[in-house]
Length: 263
Ligand SMILES: NC(=O)c1ccc[n+]([C@@H]2O[C@H](COP(=O)([O-])OP(=O)(O)OC[C@H]3O[C@@H](n4cnc5c(N)ncnc54)[C@H](OP(=O)(O)O)[C@@H]3O)[C@@H](O)[C@H]2O)c1
Image (tube, rainbow, N blue to C red):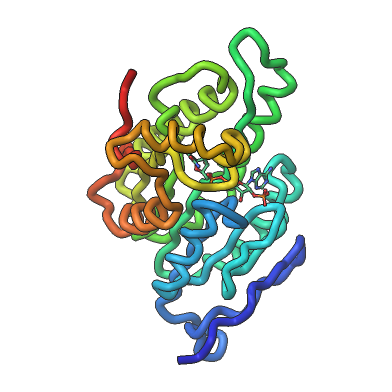
């Protein structure tokens, strides 16, 4: 077996790397592409690895590089329309002539705030990453996706319920659910399917940032599901890959939380 190429970073340049092992001369054969926002860590990074292992050419859009060798990292701050447009210029070329695309809207930011303590400026910043960036990418890429593609959204348990102290996140996660449902209706008959994958407590940077590393808090959070543990990013990645391969779930919300206890 040959070892995969090293991870490549392409900050705002007008070219993209040679296609992986699918190119004969200038003509691409059976080229499968996965585009993942926020694949620098966590669920996105695990999903990038899963798609790569299945032979996809994988692109990550994040401020940091994806650590998975073989993934093309497009340095992109999703709060910047210019940065998204630069990445989209590259991605438009990458999806030309390919046979299927998995477009995964995974990146999100989470802040601690509340309905009575969240400035509109702060809400706007959260929405710009969690909602507007998704729309900007969709506007550029949806018209170019071939049949057999998917547009997948990583939501949250908080896409369908609220907890105290996560106002802007809850608002944005509900908005993402609306986007997924509208995507399903608006792409009717296109051969492209959509779904929302809603992870429960998953052991990532986002969770650690909010919980810290106190074993007691971790145990309490792990105890909120039927299996008394945190979810591994790889488990969510496998579900995302499955969702891409199964158009029968078009429009569905897939909760993946080990059975969360309701209080
Ligand atoms: N972990 C959980 O328990 C949990 C539970 C429910 C839902 N989720 C959802 O799962 C998804 C992935 O979260 P995760 O837990 O894997 O979080 P994570 O490890 O913190 O990763 C978040 C990703 O989003 C990217 N990102 C954030 N702001 C960005 C920006 N302005 N521009 C570009 N990229 C940005 C980060 O990349 P850079 O920092 O490199 O830019 C990073 O790759 C999110 O949608 C999250 O809401 C997670």
